Image (spheres, rainbow, N blue to C red):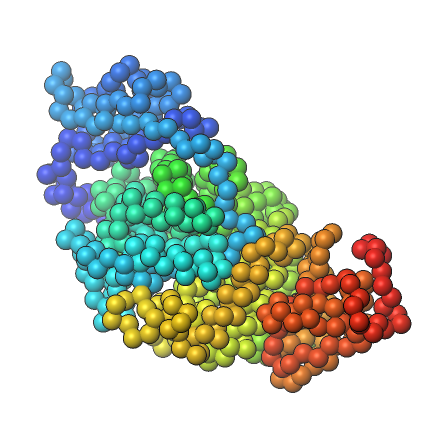
Length: 638
C-alpha cells in the first residue's frame, strides 16, 4: 500500500510543483442561516500546511486540521458567529501574505429549508443528457477536457447538453412528467466512456461539455417555474480516477486500497446482500463494500470523517445553489451504511421535506425495505438508514417475466401479485420508486419487440400502483436498445430529433412516425391524467388474486375509487363482476381513462387480450340495469 501511495504522490508532485500557494477552496462559498452552522473549508495548494492561515474581519477559526499530505488544510468556522458577508482566507509565510481567497456567505432564498421535493404525486423522467438533445454545438468538446465529441462512436460523447434539455422542457411537461432525473452532469474527465458521468472528477463543477453551473441552476429554476423538479444523480460510493483529489490524495485512507492490485484496485464482488447478512464472512463483506466498482472508479471511504463531511457539504451545496428538488443516489448499498445514515440525516435535517431515493439493486422486498428509513427489517439489524425512499427492484425484475409468462401458481400475473404482497415490509410504501427500465437495464421495448400492448401493460402498472413511477427517456416513442448485443451504449441511444441532422423529430408530436405516436399518445394521456389523481398518489390499495392471467386491483380513498385491470392473457377474458363486489358496491359505471368512454358495470366485463383498463368509478345510476345483488348503496363504508 505504501509503495502504491508513493507512486501516486510522486506523480502528483509534478502537478503540484506549478500550483499557486492557494489553488482551490471548497466549497467556494456558503450560506448564512443553515441549521448546522459548522462549515468545514478545504484549502488546497502547494505545501499549504507549512504556512499560517488567518481569516480577516475578526472571523474566528474554530479548528484547523492538517493531514499527512501538506497540500491540504481543513479549516472549520461557525457561520453563526460571522457577522460579515465576506471575509478573506489569507495564507501567510511569516508576516508575508502569499495568497488569499475572498470567501462569501450568501443569503438563502426564502423558505429554502422547507423546499418541496418529489413524492408519489410525481412522475420522474430519467434522461442521460449526452444522448437527449444537443442545444449548444459549441460545447460538444472542450480544450480543458480529454474526450472529444464523436457521435459515430457508440460509447463516445455525442454532444447532448443542458441547453438541449432546457429547449425541450415543453415536451417533457406536455408528456406528463413532473420531475426530471439526470444521470450525473458533474465533470467526468476520463479518457473514454466519460458520457455516463459516474466517474466524476470535480464534484463542484458541471462538465463543460454539458454547460455551466449557471445553466444547471437555470434548468432547475425553469423546472420550478413549471411546478416541476430537478433531481440530481448523486454518487457517494466512487469518484473517477482522474479526480484532482485522487491524483493527490489528502490521506491514504481517502479511498480503499488493496495490496497486489494495480493502483490499489480490486473489483467489488457486488454482493451487497452481505450488508444485512448476519452470517456473512468478513472477507465477502469487505470485498463488496470496499472493492472498486470499476478500474476507473476508486472506492471512496465514507468512514473517514473528512470524506463524510466533504460529501455531506457538497450535497447540501448543490441543493442550495441549484435549488434542487431531490437526489437519486447511485449504488447505495455499496457505501458504508453507518456513514450513509449520517449523510442522509444531515441533509434531511437541513431540508425536512427533501426526498432522497437510493439505488437499492437487490432482489427481494426484505433486502430492499431494510434500506428505507424506519424499516422494521433494518431495525432487526440495529440499523436505521435515514434514507426516505428506495427503488423497487423486486417489481422491476418480476414485470417482464410476468408479462412473458402464462399463468401459473407463481408465474404470469401471479408474479406481480406476489411482489406487491410484500408491501407490508416497507415503512412508507408510497415513497418507493417503481419502474420497468432505466439507463442500466435492457430496454423494455427491446424485450417485447416494440409491442405497444406490452408497453401499455407495463406503463399502466407503474402509473397506478403505489409509489413514484419513473420512466426512461425515449420509451414513450418506442425507443429500443439491446444491451446483450450492443452493451450499455445501445440502451442509451440518441433521442430522435435531438440533433439537427436527425431525419425524424420525435419531440414534435406532429412529426412523429405512426409507431411513435401510438406509444407517445398513450403515455401522454395516462401521465397527464395521473397528475391530478390523489387517489393514485396516496390512496389505499385492494388487490384481487389474479385469475386467468388477469390482475385486478383498486386504488381508493374516501372520495373516489379507480379500478385497474391488466389482462395478460392471449385471449379476451370475461370478468364476473360479482367477484369484486366488495370494491364495486355503490359503483355502477366507470369512465375509461384512455378512451374517455363510459362503461356499464353490470354482470360482467369483457377485456381484450394483452390489454389494460383503468376505470374511474361512478356512483350515479343513469339508465343502467342493475344486478339484483348490486343494489345502490350510497354509504361508502358499507
